[in-house]
Image: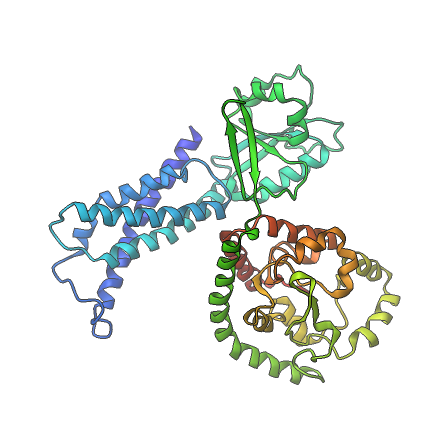
Length: 479
């Protein structure tokens, strides 16, 4: 009932947003039909807004497509919902024009108004679904009460992950522990796992069940029975870096067997070409926009401290591991004092044993780095220190998005990960950039890169690109 009511609220708001989008699109059309753009948009004085508003079947078609994609019922992570919304908008626009071609309308309607209305509606609904669902979560409205079955670490990680992803609106308030719990939160109902547990009673209060993969294997027969009691069942793999994003579930009917088909998109020459075209087209735009910015930053660096604006051509700090394990030189702003690794770093690590341990574990200084200049600190905070790498992208040495470019001295530490990481070009940004790079261990960063390669899709690149912009605007770069 809660799911239905939540869907009705979203649907009602979406219909209202459609008419807002239609009104704005109509006003844009009137604006563009003025003296300046009138040669492209001829005025349609005979058509008024009320005539557009009477086309009630347009929002009906849009809402039907949203219903078909489960956008009012099955909440997924926001980026998956956004992907479905874009898909729906394209398909519904094609359907609208096809319908208008078959039905003879009494008035000729502007195609611009209809397309603009659909685009604006897409933006409005994406924003409204995100805000409204997070608001529901914050006030505890329509929350999906879930129970987790697993050990201490699994419960802690699952609860944290679901609560942080507020768009899903799951509330973990139940725990069936498969081991002796270290600590049970006060707001969590707790059961010690046994076959005598009354699962039907648990399901009445917590209709969403989350289980550990190992538990699903060991208690498969029990799990099949639990499907009769719970609304939804989630099985989370024991290994968090599994490469299942580009996978298909295949059912062999005669054998009653499920196959999980996992494929690496970047092995295909056609997919590689799409990524190359994406890099070149978007990279050219970024290159043109960034040139004046690069010039201003270079001037500020030279004013702030002695030395060149960019790392010198023969500076070993410029060398990175590239595609096919070949070294190349990155274009990079100088953010440290000249010869800082020789004159500053050894003394600093000797006087600060904690940072010396951090250097050994993370290959970086986690606190305030004395090697970094004042301007360098600002550039790193907003992730602009690597902006000149757009030159490497245009030269074909790097990609806009990809694994982080590793240093040659890190080859030995990369171990078995290196072959996978160097199978693609390193990126200016990537999954490591938006995943709290200052809090990741060296191995975690490599795991993220490998996960990105095996799970690559064009939509994943779009999501990372948008999140990178968010990270830059929120000054969550390197320190």
